Image (cartoon, rainbow, N blue to C red; front, side, top):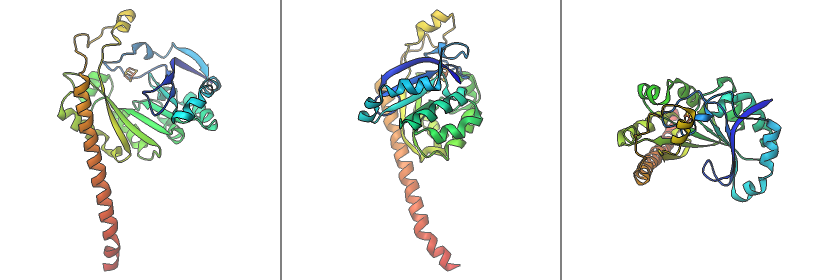
Length: 263
Ligand code: SF4
């Protein structure tokens, strides 16, 4: 089985814990207006590799993963659009004892989700927007795909991080951050942390090279300190939510026997 790989990064430190090899899979059904890798969107390009080649390459760096708590991350493009290939590569990595993270927007081949989620140790879920209309405008598709993936994620047993690219003039305000939190509420109790990634202009040359219209060419880069402030805010919100939820569960558990007795 052949997969299409946009690019590979060895010694990655940003997409999951520890030192990681990142396989960026080719092809994406989304059209984020801030995408800095528009060349990863089309399905018919990229380097062709087998799942065995992925595993063999990852194994070369295993001592780094083991020493740092790292592993392999599949990113994109959107890795879920190559479901069967992804599953095969994940099975090979799993058999080799390599930690697997999946950096996804939650859009792909739905029939592969259960197997992928059973094999993944960690999901980095990119949530693009909270509002259907704006999602269609900024991302090019409906939010229904995300909702389907969130439903499947409810049964996920591994670690979960949420990520969100903050764009000045679009989502850099408390209302957007609050709404983003509401969107992820169905799985919020599983979320370890939320990363707010500041929008940058690093992809601008690629649009020029590909002859594509870049809608955000006049948009300033997101101030990293302001993004960090929103990140602290939403993570505190997450903490409070989880503490309250745990408190509610304790309350319920401590009340339940009495309720049973009084019947
Ligand atoms: S999901 Fe990623 S690769 Fe796909 S369009 Fe958005 S930013 Fe680009």
